[in-house]
Image (cartoon, rainbow, N blue to C red; front, top):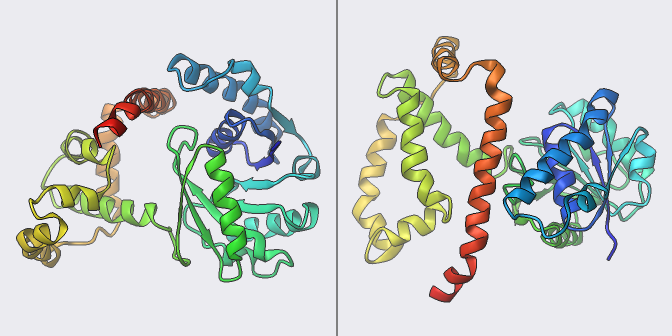
Length: 316
């Protein structure tokens, strides 16, 4: 099937989504209200696709993938006769609400309208739409071209058919969709990340460790396991009798942690101290280059996972 996708917003997330869909063989139309952002999108996408090629993460010539992405100055041109609109604009309810009114008017009645929002439930900006049943959140991880998870969450009026069609389309695009059963701000990933971040910031603010050492705990400790299995499988494998045995052994310990846990209040003083520590390691003018380094590390990890996936299946 010749899928046509509109990607609205050409920042980091939008450009990465364009790569996801183009890499899957879909026709992609990219639109941004800011002309300067749109002008820079295709060259940036080309650089990222060339990097993917260097790590063996694409199966065809780079230019063929890039050629599937077209920059459109007009929103109407971008969304005409597409199967999916992937919105990536600012996290402002009123702005999203205005855009979705336009999208509802400009698209086919069966076009899926998805938002990449990190925390806003779809009900906050789709309630008044005639076509609200086809609207949902499809929240990716930055960048979706390298981290395949996408969280699908409908509003109370989103149909099950919409969610099923969306799941099939994202799977076709090579992503790993999960379905959030009902609306909750932040969905799954950011709520899990928020709990860990809250505890890390609290430990830092209370002087238990430096920011660098807390990053090391994650990078060289939990992160190694969590790069290929989740927390439930982790604890299932960490006790001879599985989850029930783990809970019997360590449940009281975790309950005791909860009693002395101090939620972090995002105090300006603590954030300023953390920022100063980070800036001593990474000046602001080096963040973009470090982000590209991060992307290359993710590419190397994906290349490793691809190379070992067949042998892992044989061992099961």
